[in-house]
Structures are given as structure tokens and as C-alpha cells.
Amino acid sequence: MSTEQKTGCSITLDTPADIGEQLQVLQVHSRDNVVVALQPLEQGVALPVPFAALNAQQAVPAGHKVALTDIAKGEPVIKYGFAIGAATKDIRAGEHIHSHNLATLLSGQVNYRFDGCQAQPLAFPDGLPREFMGYRRANGKVGTRNELWIINTVGCVNRAAMRVAEQARKLYGDEIDGIHAFTHPFGCSQLGDDLDHTRRLLAGLIQHPNAGAVLVMGLGCENNQLSKLLAASPGVDLSRIRSFNAQQVEDEIEQGLAAVEELIAQMRSDKRTPCPISDLVVGMKCGGSDGLSGLTANPLVGRMADLVAAGSGKVILTETPEMFGAEQVFMARAQNEQVFGDIVSLVNDFKQYFIDNKQPVYENPSPGNKDGGLTTLEEKSLGAIQKGGSAVVNQVIRYGDTASLNGLTLLEGPGNDAVSSTALTAAGATLLLFTTGRGTPLGFPAPTVKISSNSSLAARKPQWIDFDAGGLLKKDQNAEQFSYDFFRYLIDVASGKLTRNEVSDNREIAIWKNGVTL
Image (cartoon, rainbow, N blue to C red; front, side, top):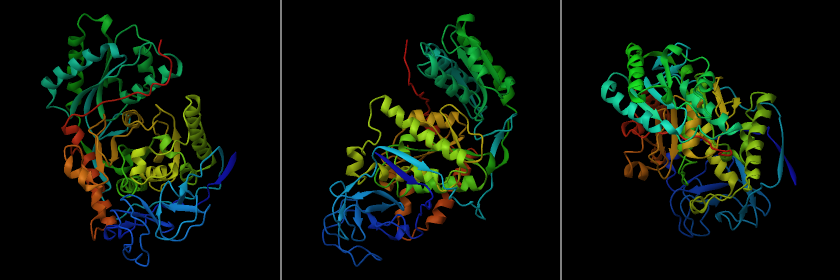
């Protein structure tokens, strides 16, 4: 069955200014015919103003939906301003809406049509900082950190790379922002696209502006040959790169430390200087989401995306499967027909990846998602994509590619936290914004700002969480001022303020493995 979806629709996702006053329920968008219970509602209780004319027809768990109007069988249920499915039976105003009376509208192949870009230009607000203190590199890119990174071509030299990093930190750790080895198990016995994925991902890290210098360590006999990896890293400052194969030197640890000494000598003169927002590259990610993620943390991060884009910076959004069922929102914001076609290919290619691996494309939300109130894939995806804000989509790139245009870029990648966050870093993100409702200690090469969707997580795990978006639900909270405060905090982080993952030294990379191993 083929269904046509017109993309010429309004794409504004509102965060109401009075969000903090609605302690019991929240209407996410003015077009919605549902509200979300922010705390459990008892049967018969009247909803708060301005919905006081309605009573909850059943007990409603927190995070679940309540109908604002009568919805006839077959009519769309609207949340985030878009249809999240259709009623499977007549629904009365005040009724609980979930799997018993709501079903997805997704089925079969979808044909899309471009009707022009529906997004409006964004203006950067007065009164917010327009600069951060960054490290400008020889190629013009700007880093938010001045670190020495050790990248290995193959997993066989993981321990050697880690030993070099450990000893180098003892010798030079106080002289720069950090010395880190980013190890992985790949690089050997890989073929074709699988090997290319690994090489392109590592090449992106070698070229990253947060790395003031890079030591590349190889073994010598691996498929991911050192010479080819360096050739895949064009535009790097070769004076800031050292490399060798362990099989070709007498002592790889001594060789590595000698190379580090040379690189540190050059990095000592690197200084932070004022840089415009247009030099900032921010990656957006969510993981361990809960029922509030799409109501607090993700919209807050989406507002940051809009502010960075309005300042002519770069914003990168990935997790392609998290777009399924909501992809038309991005298609309606495509800058032109070429970008529109690239979005269609991005989504359809990833759906084919699911099909090739005999997995359902429109998998329902998990049991945990459903317990939290998410009923359909459309609902889950519409909440997730709010991290992309409302800016024009200027570019679509594939896994391992680097974002080259200002504004919003969509990056091919899976939903896995470590794989997608590493891909964001390799694509050039010098700052990662990671929203979570359940929490995770994971951190990545770029400073990773963890934003909790609820205040209880922030209170329970202060060693993980950098910013509490649950504060948006406090009484009398001004959402605009709240977002501006968060933006100022991000400028501080970009200028050197450490994130929790940096303090705890939680840093790692993961590479998308999608091919045959010999």
C-alpha cells in the first residue's frame, strides 16, 4: 500500500511561555487535541485552567494523554502539532488515550512531495553572547578544547595507545586541556563499505578541531593501512600529526612518547581567542528517554539548535530511525529540492537497512516507552526530532562525512548512543548536547553536556547531569529566560568550563559495524 504525504505543512513546534504554570497537564502545541498528564490524574478530577471544563474520564498515569475534544473513530490524534496516529474507536473529551484507542498511521511505502521550504529565517536575539573563547586552527576551524588525541588504526595496538596516553598525562597533563587515547576493536579483517566506515570515522576524528595535535598509531599489517587513513584526512595541519606502525619501530611506547613530546612543544603556544557563534558546531543526541523528554529536554535543546543556527553556526542531528514517522517535518524544512531528495534518500535507505536485516521498519515503541505514555512511533519520533528545532535543513551527510554548511545538517546514523555520538564528533561537532530521562554516564571525545528531562534524575545523579531541563515545569518558570540561561551556560562550556563527563573522564568512541568480518 502506498500513501502520499504532503510536506507543505507548518513546522513550528511550540514551547508555551507558561509551561511552568501547568503543573498537572501540558498542551505541547496549540493545535493539539490532547494534553499530557505531568502527574497522575484521578478519575473524575477536573483538569486545571484553561481546561477546567473537562474531567478525567479514567485514571491517567503521568506521561499519558488525555483527549481535549471528542475524536471520532478514524480521526487523527494530534500532539506536537502533528498526527501521531488515528483513533481506533470514538474517544470522548477527557478520556485516556493510549494503545487501547489509538494506532499508528504508518504502513507500507511512503511517497513524498516537495512543496517548497516552509521554514522561516531565524533571528538571533539581542542580549545573548555572540562569541565564545575557542582555539582557532590553521585551517580556520575552531575547537572548544586543546587536547592531544591518540588514534589507532586497529584494535591490536589499543593497549599501546592507552599506555602512551597514561604516561603522557603524567608528563604533560597540566600543560594542555587533555591527552586521550580513543581506542576501538576494528581495522583488521574488514572489507568494502565496512572498512570504509571505519576509515572515514577515524579520519573525521583526526581532523577534529578539538585535537590540537594527533598521534596516529598503526600496527603495520592491518586492512586499515596507516597511509590510507592519513590520505583520507585532507586539510589537516601536518605539523600537528605524528604517525608510525608499531611493527616498524623498536619500542612503540618510547616512540609514542617521543612523538607526544614534539607535539606538546607546538601546542604550548595555543591560546583561546574570541570566536563568533558561526564557528561553533553543536551535535544533538538523546538517550535513555522518558515520558518528559519530548516535553522538556528535547524542546530546550531544539531552542539551542535554533539559536546556534540563527548565529550562523552549525547544528548536526543524527539517529535516523528516530526520524521514522516524523521525517515529513524535516522535508518541509528542506532548503531546496536537492536537500529534500537527500532527506528522502536518507530515510528510505535506512528503512532498507532494516528490511535487509529482516527487522520491522515501523517497530512500535518499547514496553518502557509505552509505560511512559508513548503509544506510536510517530509520537516517539516527533518528540525526538524536537532536538532539531525549527531551522531550515541545509545539508544531509552520510556516516563518516563532515558537516560543511552553516545551519541544520542531518547526519546518517543509528540510534545507538555511543555510535551516533561518535559520528557527531567525527562530523565536526565540538560540543554535544545529550538529553536523557533515565541517565547514562557515557561521554565522548567532544565535551558532552547531559540534560535531564526531569529534576529527580538531576538530583539523584549529579555526577552525570550538567543541566536540569525539568526546571521548565516549575511554577512561574519563564521558558524563554530559561533557554537563554542555558545558552549562556553552553557558551561557558565552549569557552572551557568542564562538563561532568570530562570531570569523570568518561570518554569513548564506537564505530558502526555493518559488514562481514573475515
